Length: 281
Image: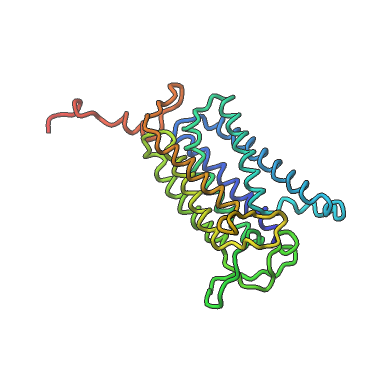
């Protein structure tokens, strides 16, 4: 149950790394540099999130040192936010150091990240983390948790039918990943795929939070504003949508780095015979 979160998430990470290599080729950036960027960012995200979890639960971990072995299985929105910020900061630093084009690199990373989030939410579903609100009896797809570890780590109600909101989020991220992957070789402006990815992720997070239990007994509170009108993840979702909109509203076409390899779409365009080279009809 709970250990499955780490296993399923790890599978998603491996898939995202493989997809990132293919996406780097499609947009014409150095796949080796993208690989290094992904590994460093992933390490920074994991370290930052786990350090926060240890700090927030230091007294409990001192009484039960063996619980340290289970920290890699804990999911929480605040941990995810800290991990994303640490990973994004590391990615920006490495991209600048390696002279990777920012927009093209962001485009290459958008579909793999969305695909990885699918598995992250499936892992949360298996672990009972980020659980949904109580479901009515006519919801035939509701989930009921029984493992005590889910209650210990995430405060998951046991024996109560809940909305599988993690599955809702996984479906949303899967649709987003598919859309971004199809659009990647077709884009004409650098940053469009990344902008759409940010906006799509923000919308998915905001909407699925409607079915999450805000009053759960999780280790770190989700945080709400305006008397529960909006919670922490929804606030972050609004900023994601705004950031994506800023990328998409850019009207100036960003030139490609002359040292970068041409993308698949550009190679097709270059190899296609022009009208003046064609013979008479």
